Image 1 (cartoon, rainbow, N blue to C red):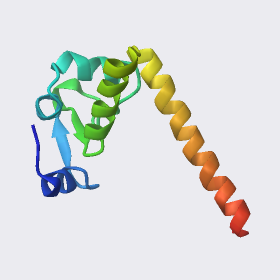
Image 2 (image 1 turned 180 degrees about the vertical axis):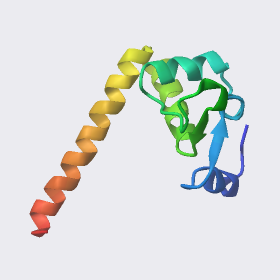
Image 3 (image 1 turned 60 degrees about the vertical axis):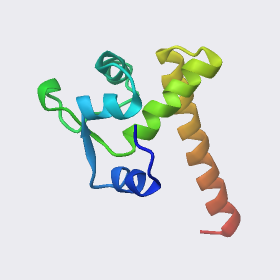
Image 4 (image 1 turned 45 degrees about the vertical axis):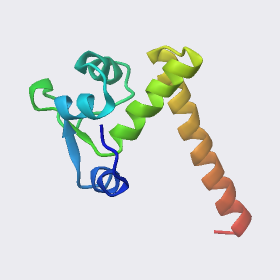
Length: 104
């Protein structure tokens, strides 16, 4: 498990990526969980070929958020996908509203 804030910063930048094994180890989950997240559309690997999958750095945050939703609220992966989609829509609408408020 990664415990250094500087390591998190390094892993989550736009240049970093994880293999399936690295991501599953960092998050403490079986690779099957990551594969199921891909199947639900929650995670998007950088390559279509499962043998070459690499995941962008921010995938670490998505997996950990999914685990919290599953653990704390009992949400299944389909529900997690919907929750993430709705949270993204809220974020986009807030940005749009902010632009309208500032006159941009």
